[in-house]
Image (cartoon, rainbow, N blue to C red; front, top):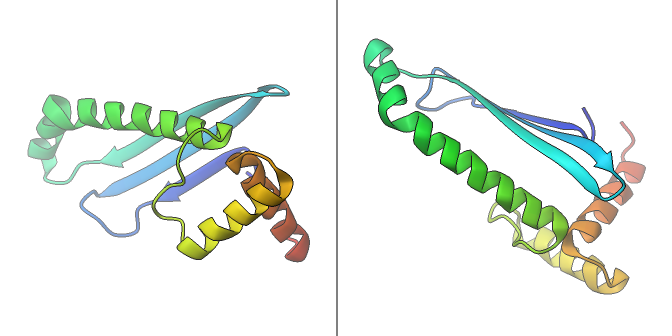
Amino acid sequence: IPHRKIVAKMIEGPFKRWVITVTFEPVSEKQTKTGIQVEYDMPMGPLGGFMDKVKLKKVAERGIENGLYRVKALLEGTGSIPVYITLEAYREVLKQKEKLNCSVSEAIVKLIKEQEVKTPI
């Protein structure tokens, strides 16, 4: 759902199934409620289920919470750009940020909107 939901699915990896869903729900003009849901099936049958209950689930919950804080900081313009953005894209964001005298998140939104106009869905 554009601007409301992002879903990522594992194609290959250690889990039988791994789906992450991030949702964005407007609360007010300057507030958004963000949620994250991770669905996965452990490999190795009962042993994998035991490992999940003993260790993985707690570690995953802390990782998800940390990820939400990072997304919040990024969108508010107080966080850092994730490492998976290309250097070329990062430079473009910084140019737009300086040009508009705005936050990083506002520059990213502007670039996305410009791209949507160039390539309508």
